[in-house]
Image 1 (tube, one colour):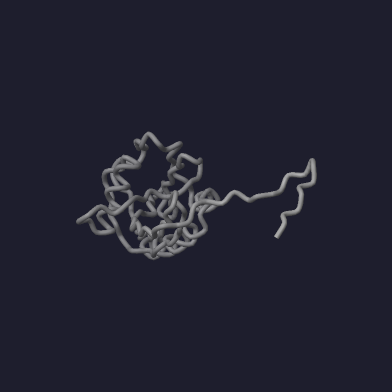
Image 2 (image 1 turned 60 degrees about the horizontal axis):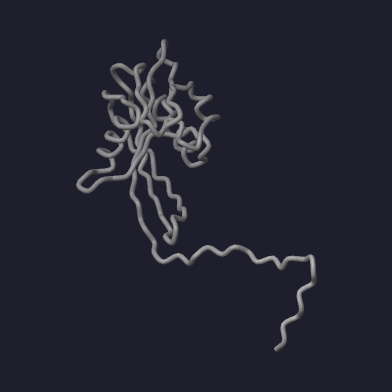
Length: 166
């Protein structure tokens, strides 16, 4: 079969193809919705971190060998925020998402816990890769979070926090 001659001045559109996915990688992670009480019993603030892409989210990270999800949540919160005193209260749920890393499909599952920030909650030290860390009133935290699944878990967290305060 003969190929048609190209028309001068018009480039044939060839979409850029990424290499095929060669493997599926599962990455279990854990983190927490951290809260503290404000000046009054009803005031609640949520701690958010700003990632390297300027997105506000919650602290979380990979589960290391021998760790439970709860232990990972505590460790990651300490590492990412500098918050040393906390009490992990409840399991809030799981977040599932996937992304591509070169020729791998990464399936990430994150266990999220409700965490009460205790002790010195004002002097926090974010890790170098972060662009920010801040306590927000609940409604503002909901507006700042760019991940829908985390927003849903924040609403569940608020219900549980109200039950604790009552």
